[in-house]
Length: 291
Length: 304
Image (cartoon, rainbow over all chains, first blue to last red; front, top):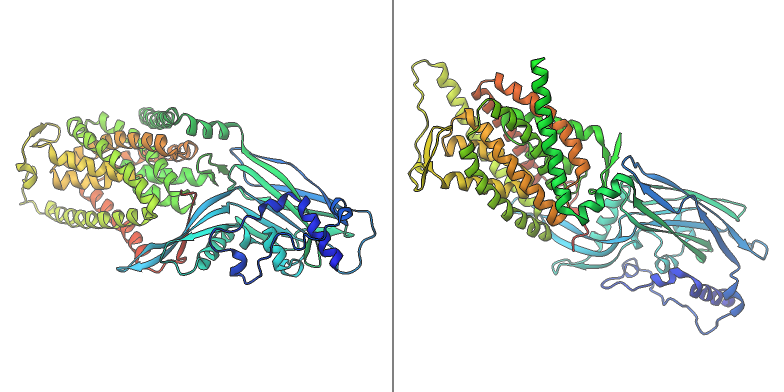
């Protein structure tokens, strides 16, 4: 077991996702959930050079497309994520291998407001600013998440939905940021922007896996990130990261850039469209009445 | 038929938007109101972010009012002089309004202020109009009643008097200028043309004849909302042209039908209809303020 632990520590160093371990500015979610916050490297004093280069099982994966084009008729998109487990030893005994796949949009800030009744009417009273929360976050798993992922590994890799956001700062009157962050999760889950699809990853012979991840119609442009985790006994044994570039194309792209780079021209164009349409309809109906 | 809006960054049904525009255009032609006070809340409801709904709503109002005002120019029911004075006030108000809009949004109180404005203004105006038009409808049935040209009120005693021939008025320029400023502020904050404020203000405050009120208010609304659209586009990049085009297609057609319909109806009936509509929207908004909301929490994304 000691050997396994230090080998895991070694794998971490090689992973690009380990850079994600920035601590929360104010109130770490891991504390709110009662799980111990651990240092990134469990046991750095006992590195094992052989395992650092060759983890027992590694992910090899691909995406059906590494970019998504938003056209005028864009109505969401399905991305097929597939891959295999590369290993040079027989399949280990014990519980079967599990896979978790996450897809997330670039993070942006958001403010969560809570209404209160003041003088009979409901007004936005208290707020919590979330410095970083992705506008879209989907988690697909090969089995129920709480059965295949230990909480400490969850908080380390920020896998489950509640870990999608970080760095909260409330107004002084806010006793706890927890109800606010829960509300953010709940609202975005209801809107289909945050999603946990358990059993959506299918695994064949503990070696091949695939999952379809549906991207919703209300996508924001940017560099999306796909992460694939291999798990055994609730622990992450390997991870793989791939980007998906989501960008507007054609007319959508042209209008968007015009609006932000030449706003006066864009504004005048919007007005011209309005005036021509208004005048055109007026003229057309006059013609109709005469006829 | 879903369509992805490039600035709003949401996907919505194109036919819904055309239908929405049509409904609002009908109001515009019928009552001389831009219909913005309906379109903006409806856009919120289908998931358009509030800043984009307000700015694009203003753009849509431009189209429906151009369409409406052309029809009124043909029927010579526009007082250009009065419209010009209202317009000067409107442009000043619009600049102020866009600034206030930004402050309110950063404070997280935009929705509340907009709703409160609606409830207060719509409630007062709706009741006033309903009372007045029911009374005049009763009077017109009794043949002994002789109608005066207009009521002389306190606003007629102010300095800097000006002749408005089309309206048959000789009054100070300040009352129309102030009405214009108020309407400009509302145009910028609520994405409305402000017709629902201006039409009653012209009738009851300035004493203008109903015949020229609708055309003149549309004339002012066209220019003020055009200016507001431009301000929002340049300052905050919140005008979604794709959304605007779909609303406009429905809007211009609706406006033409509404204008034709308006010419056939009697002025008192028209005013009762508008009063009831105004009170209906007011009641709905007031309920939202006083009843416990379904979700106490709300998210505003990306506010720095």
